[in-house]
Length: 297
Length: 316
Image (cartoon, rainbow over all chains, first blue to last red; front, side):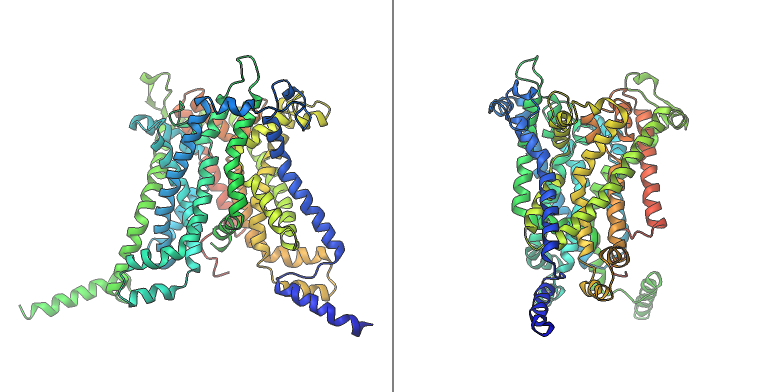
């Protein structure tokens, strides 16, 4: 009996080991499958609830059922017709893209230096990035509010872009230096042997190899900018620079006397769509980026 | 002339050797150094301009009586603002609420995150689906999610309120804090899970198998092998989450606006700045929060031996 069953067992163990896992019994499979189902449900129900709210008519809003009793696109057409939401949406996209671009360029330069070059002060740079990554942003709101008002940056795009770049940089430097460490040294040396300067070695050899890491970093930084709320409400006062998350509180109902639940839900869904797209297309990259910076250092 | 030249060259060599007291820097090493500084300079300048200078400015503001409604009345008052804040029950109430939210939400997130990490680690099928689903709470705009929770708990509108017999938890202090913690946990468990998953993948499978052969139960293997080996990853994840949770703002701002005794320290600071327009007191609160964060980080790094991410990871 044992002699007969033994070979298949070892065979399955081997295949499982190559995948880096112990064998799972069918019962365990069902257990983990059940847990997975619960995870997916818990993650999605609150999002589906927002979607449901956004399609409810003002009367259906007052019915707490999960599926709208009456469906309408009205909430979406309403918010996409007012500058109260469209302008902030444009601000969010513009400020997010510019801040991401600047952060990734500056962070790539610094991360290259951290990962590849020997120079004094590296530990200080890493320590400083760490400090800023964990900084209580509220501690900056008061002084930034005062400084930006005196410099005329208050309620402007640069007034948000500059702090977003500063907070995108630590994230970028961490993630990118982890990615840069994975790139083989030899290629850079080979380029230098062939007569390339260190700068050329960076732009011609390392940068193209680093492109996947840079895309990952760009996604993480953009998500952080897209999500930011505290600075966005504190450093803006009109739709000239207010971003989409900050604009939600300023949406009104279809008339002055209706509660703005539907429009707010619709706006929340609109600003969630880019995130769903990022997550669906770049799931692996986002996971790799999040964990590389924090665990590999 | 001919005599001078070698001497000059000699002193130069000595001068270069002295500060480095290792080996003389070659031309290449010096170029590398310069390039290193050059490449880091823009990032450093931006980070310093947005953080270091404002923090120094905030320290200065915290020593002044400065109310935007009374611009004529700006005056240096020393540590009087600190005295006012630290003797105010509002500060201690906000600190207590913040600590309560932080401790409970981080503890629950750690347990659920570990479970999530194990689920993602163990399953062979549907891994991608679980990860994708888990990333949605991580990526979603906190404010958008907070509105979802807000409406879900609004009596007459929300499914959760309806499920709990038309409960209105956002109007009572501890229930409202419970809802805030729930929103925090939903949002941050995936991040915790992913960080722990990365730590989990570093635990060698052979060790687990050896323990299994020796008759260790699943729980024993978890507590004696997995957790000790994952300790660095766990500590870093908990440190990140603790500091992040301590500055909680978005969820409370949407869910309760800090009413019914749910003000966190960040909300309190914001209120003093934008509702009371008091730059002096607002800055004082900001500096006190900063000090709290430094203390938390110091406790983790010194007390628990958390390696600061990015430092001596290779040595471990």
